Length: 594
Image 1 (tube, helix red, strand yellow):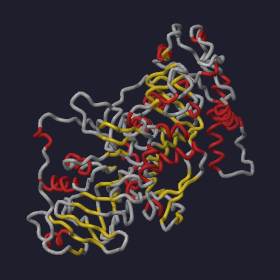
Image 2 (tube, helix red, strand yellow):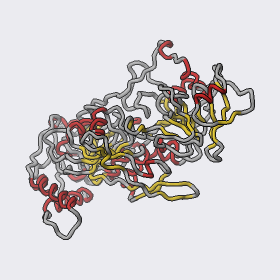
Image 3 (cartoon, rainbow, N blue to C red):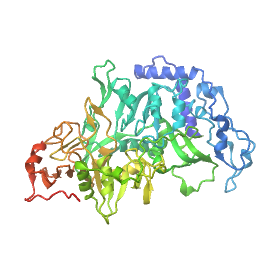
Image 4 (cartoon, rainbow, N blue to C red):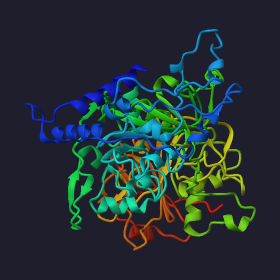
């Protein structure tokens, strides 16, 4: 294909170019050229994948009965990035189907199928390459491709920059690449439960560019759509737009920051601030699909779709691993989620563990589902915010559990920002599907009328103001509606996830649910937040175990106490609150216990 040929020609040019300084650029450019030249001259004899002997069998065609196709082992391609791509040689049986459904002749180059991950990757990965990787949590991860990159003898996979929504977990998916020391910089929205990743970051061994989840998906999408930059409300008037988020710590154990994020361009439109973001152009995109045909048309499954389509669009070269591969023409065009125009190579998903990060199941034992105390009060009160017909996004923890208390006769649609509208209850025991998870990486089911979509589509709904209500937790809230929820400098740095996108959306009510005070007794509702903000002037209502506050985020009128918990006095609330507030006319309504 022309796109791949152009890419390999550029790699060949880089490999044969002189590294002598030529009135150009800087030392860093010269060193990159040298690295690529050294790479091109190294021995790159491909390894045979352990699954290679059966890879062809996954192409579902009654005509295919012979041995698997084998790629040409052209040393010129392997060693100097020749402008021609070796395609799988057609077997005798495979070439019996010589015409398509319109009677047009098929050619050998019409198939994008490659037998192994090794052969798909080895001639396009170079030191310092930029990658886009699909997946969210452990859902929809291209396990086969990532496992191949993590191999010790894949020595050209080093100093990589990787963009992906989350960072996987220790010893799995992207976690293997971190442990192998192959990643220089990670662009992600959430560190998650990857302890090794966190230690490498704070130890100065890894650069981490924390970026809002929706912004990552949009940057990928923009690259594939030919949009070099765009403006988004996400992160405006926060440390994200102002600059100063740690990207790299010094490796001397001092805890000092070596590299921090720069300020971003901010512009005002219609009275609101917007942040400029640049498209993310990847050298190679790694993608997981449920089904593909030999022309690269893709079908995804459930929330395993997530950012896979967006990652595919962003890559100069896109390599897809699919659980099932069929012949071109076997897919109904209306079923295809992503056109093969974005895809260059397709392999079988030989490594398909599909690990579940947080298995959640519905228990038959009602006693296991009982929540009591102040948090139960918060969830019951939060559920009263749900109105019939609402589209709602619920954050991790108490907001999600509030859906167990939806009032009788009220039907809402719950959205997961990783790509679903219509979340149902946790699955029954033994029925969990790793392709269906929520934003907390928990297993879920779906209700009648549900829909699944890509991460970019999901955040289009959010940023476009199409959700009625967002409910999430907080570390701190201010009297004027500021929210801090994602970082405690020097102590906690999990990432902002999708929260900045959610609270920055216009016309969406933002409700915070949280304990009134921290575990150490310190105030969480204060006059001005001391922690870096998730959003400025974004909160409409705060629900705690002690009371309910309304927030005048637009007019600057501060907090108003509108409900109080039974047994709690106004003086109790004042003592537990680090900000001034007004009260509604006495008697103050009670938070309903029922």
